[in-house]
Length: 99
Image 1 (cartoon, rainbow, N blue to C red):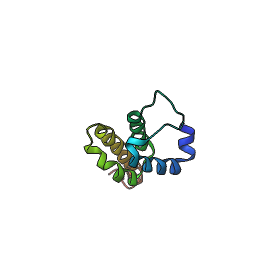
Image 2: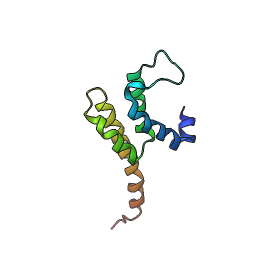
Image 3: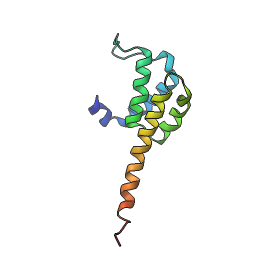
Image 4: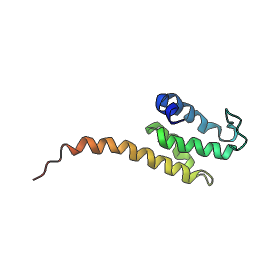
């Protein structure tokens, strides 16, 4: 799965964005009886935490108030923000010179 996510990040991210609109009607492509809709939706949110971008944050934000998925959405947003902040921190490190 990691290899698939790495090779097709944009397409998968777009599919996950669309999946956020279908919380009650998601099904597993593999018809996994152990993966129920609530767990599948949590996986959607969690995976956006791994591969999401700034657009993902705005799509996840409404879910932060949800009693079931709120903590997952907040965690995913924080993960995206940390990942996006890391390159900026690296870019500015070379500007800091010791006295």
